[in-house]
Image (cartoon, rainbow, N blue to C red; front, top):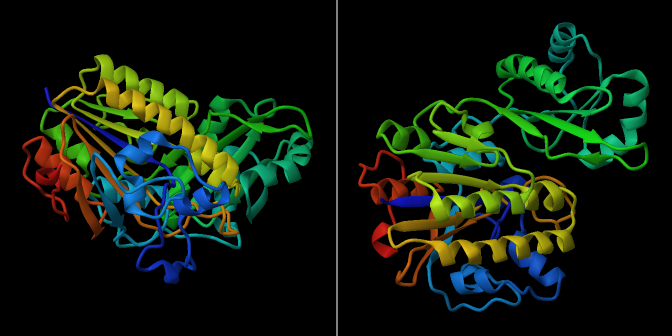
Length: 383
């Protein structure tokens, strides 16, 4: 049986995109700048796979044993939803709406009336900083912390002792309904725990995205009777209709463990994985040292995955955007993403810089002997 494992390393940008200037992102390079900050990286699996061929990475060479290159995004916007959708073949032409000055009162009132809670905050903020600033008030008043970022996200933070997970998820489901009218990409539940001055966000985060407005790689392979499996926040970004199975994860190591289990003994044809820690824990917090530690976890995990691949398996590693932790901003950065494709006994190839994340969907379609219905070209004959 043919199996494809498509792994999105969330936020792993590899250099400023051709249109980076329009986003204020000149000079960004998430992987390259992290390597400079730590005076060189020790990532032996990334080295063998050719990440050093894709962009300049201190500590990595240019020799490689995979098919590698960089892909630039066609979709407007710069967030996880548009990035993942384009990877899956769906180009977004209408940018999700952002609210850098806070959400309109009309939207807030509608949601507050229905959920029977009040919001505090309603500002552009770092998630860790706003719970530090408003957490005590939240606990005292039971009002929910609302904030956004440079992405189109409506984020609701609540302490587990104030609002149970079930209640927070209910609130987010109601909010999702109202946010549709304002073209907001995601509603995100952000639970946290711990005493005042030691708050800690949990892995019970849940994203409520808009359903893709067209065919995606997931829907396409599912309609062709191939078994699909989503690991991480895939079900949050695509819904569950076209997933035969899905699982949420508690960190990248947990996600890698699920992936490794599927590689070793699974029967899904298409496994779609999101590893979110680099973005959530380190990129948005401007923590390049932590980012490097996260890269080391993934590097070690991918080594184990490669060891277990069967001859009919295809592994593709990519990213959905950048989040350069050295650029002085906490938001996503407009960058190329890596395209790294590996099969047992494959021939090393370099495809250079290519427009469109959707080339991945085209490649996977051909791998499964399906007609390419997506706006991209397949690289399968180069893998």
